[in-house]
Each structure stands twice: as structure tokens, then as C-alpha cells.
Image (cartoon, rainbow, N blue to C red):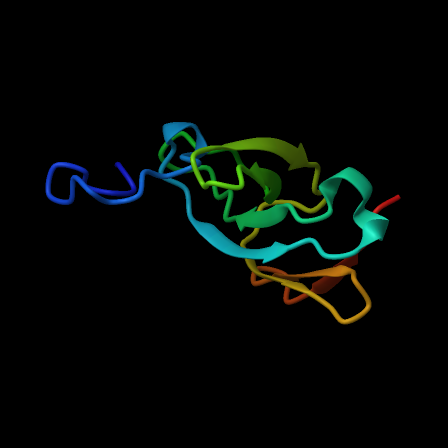
Length: 115
């Protein structure tokens, strides 16, 4: 399913990223802020609900997107996530520069920092 109906809205901004064409719920995102993130500083962390339907993988996933300054495209790296199938509903950058991730399935909140 396309993210934007370009036939109905030909002047719409084209999507920078499409999750490899999979219909999978993006559940939350946050910008990584601070020099501790090194090459990931300023990139967008996006959480997914990987419940294994419609060809999607089972298990949680966080992608780190490097969105072009003009919004014309994005590259991604996948952050491996050690928990079982769940729903990463919320991602937020904390005042300490860490990424906080809320997992709806377990009820846990995880604090993520770079190595």
C-alpha cells in the first residue's frame, strides 16, 4: 500500500522511506540527539510492531534512518533488538540523551544508549 496517493495528490511530497514495501506498523520514532550517538547523531530511530503478519518478520525491530536533508530519501540500519515478539509503541529521546523505548507487549520501558 503506498504511503501517499500520488494520483490524487500529484504535488505531494514523495516518501523518503517505504519499509521495503511491507505493510507493517511504525509505532513510534525519535531523533537521536547528542554527540554520544557518534555517526547516528541526528538520525531518526523508528520502532515497529513485528508480529509476523502480511510477510513481516516476527520480533521487535528498530531502524535507524538517515534522512536526506531535502527529504528526498533515506538509508537505514537495523538496530538488533533482543526481546521476543512485541509492539514497540513509544520511542522518545530523554533529557539524558538516551533513547527510551516502551514495549506494549511486556509493559517494559527500556533505556537504550550507544556502546
